[in-house]
Image 1: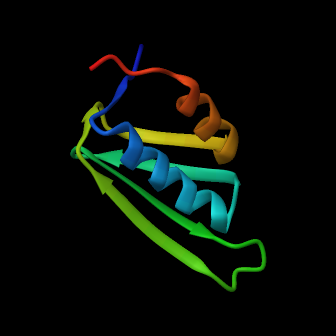
Image 2 (image 1 turned 90 degrees about the vertical axis):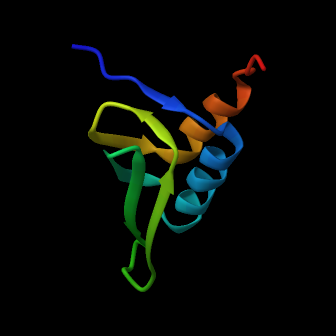
Length: 83
């Protein structure tokens, strides 16, 4: 079974990932539900916690386990988008 997540605004999604990676780059779980992606991220020592949401996504609901956020961000950044 194939699940697709379509980005409506690539630059906003990259900003979303950048904010997450500044708190914790490893082992982030993204929850996709009702056209919205949310993440709850804490720093390694749990002194800082970030809850962030991004709306405007298209695709099926589910959970994404991202082992390295910065690597995903760099891969997405290299993909050219046709307008």
